[in-house]
Length: 489
Ligand code: NAD
Image 1 (cartoon, helix red, strand yellow):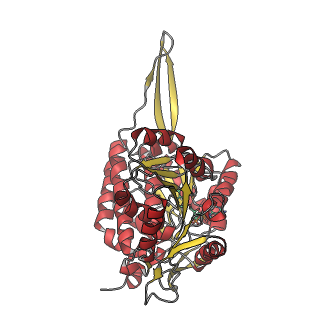
Image 2 (image 1 turned 120 degrees about the vertical axis):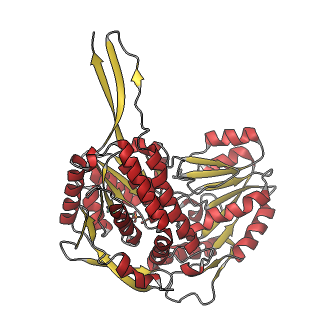
Image 3 (image 1 turned 135 degrees about the vertical axis):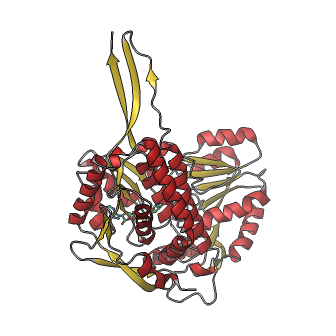
């Protein structure tokens, strides 16, 4: 089998910028090296776009929106999206291999991401011609109706942890509404975004409808957020960058959707079904090596069940191993040496101040240049401790005991974030009470979906952001509601 690294020149020959349906080099000639996080080796490079390239991309998107792409009827847009979905499904194996190489994601998780991307195109293909307006009762002699219209050119800045899934939930929804897109993927994980541009173009997406501009955050990312020619910014990433993106867009009164971080609680009451909960508790916490915005990284356990849960989690964490993406381990490496150093600093702090309940392993034979972190479980963690408050974005999980429903809600809601929450209890009344009281964009009852399916609206409250993506709700984010008032007497 030819390794993915050797296939890259065939899949993405120049790895340039994809603007107006064609590949081109960055005008300033800059390149960014691409590292394999499983080995630390450099595998290829990508273009580093300048502000001038962003101007080109926004102009190409505008020309497509005002021209051929804007003229495509909703049903035809849907057919085109379905064609792209089929092409992605057909190519999903190499897309997954490319992602595993670029991001260090275990190949099984990368395959799931590629399938999810195909599913986004499929879901929104079916939705393209089903976005209806309403007729509104008004005064005698009037007819009033509403219609949803595209915004124009939408900018999308996405992170490195789930490139294909986040492209799916934001870019595909924007295209569905007829917007033309400029996408700036993360500099640490751009290869699958470039590959999707190629696949979509080959499937017939008109030139300029989807432009992919790779580059640094401070350069290309800022230039996109601050560009006066865009009509909306969808940003997924850290709180710090998100607020700077919002400020840049505010200079032109451009609306922004912010999908930021989280410190999501998984709450177990004494009556929880432990056997059903345990595998999901662990998966929700360490999936993608904990580099998941909706990771269930705080496990809150009612006092009666607490010793049992800590013991069972300890067993499971000790058995977890971090290894190279191609071996499909429970955890891959972290994305970069910088991210590993950041996570290790949190672990060191925890070791000094907290009770270390368990630590997993790094697989024997894992390449020494890879950015591996063995997963860690801390028990009896005070809810106000930094490890229970801050988003670590690594395989570090805290367990916190509580007494009764009121304290559970208080602890769960006691961070600045509010992305996802899970409640494990057989008490139906308690399920519904907590679903109301928890500060989160999604609440799972006796389950955890780490963001849930393509159909389910997703987004945060508080410092986790604002606006919704996924499901039909995303189509509202990427369109404007127009009210038409006819006075006919
Ligand atoms: P990041 O904020 O550093 O980068 C995200 C994107 O922003 C990248 O494409 C980056 O190049 C770009 N960027 C950086 N500086 C910029 C600037 N000044 N102007 C414009 N763009 C800029 O985030 P990250 O480290 O890539 O991702 C991790 C963070 O993302 C975590 O906090 C995580 O919780 C969050 N995240 C949230 C969600 C969600 O849906 N809520 C999903 C995934 C990740």
